[in-house]
Length: 126
Image (tube, rainbow, N blue to C red; front, side, top):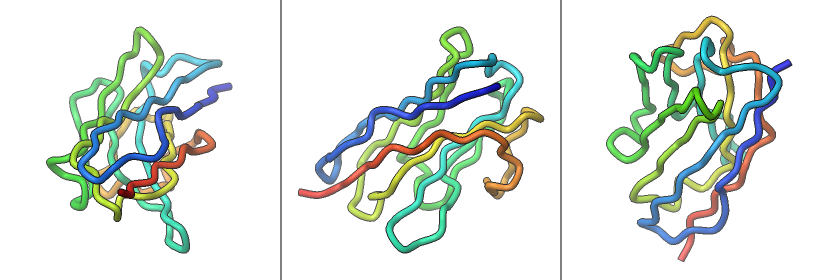
């Protein structure tokens, strides 16, 4: 059974560039699509980015395009979200997720994703 654990969150200043990691265990990520989601206090969880199993397709929410980069390292069974030029509105709990069919939906909906981490807090404040 696939399990996911996020790491790399914490308090960062505006303009900071942390990288989040998601470590998988119990199964290989090779054939899964993977994604990052976030949920700010009092708001709905939203899709941030996804990448297909092959790495050939990526999608980003408009709010993070040009600032965030998703990547994967199948040899390490790990994937990443590199975040650049962070803004206070990026403050949220960030979740990693995996999708069994290997896709990367354009809308980055939660619905296709089968496995979820517990989340890591990213707080952007001076």
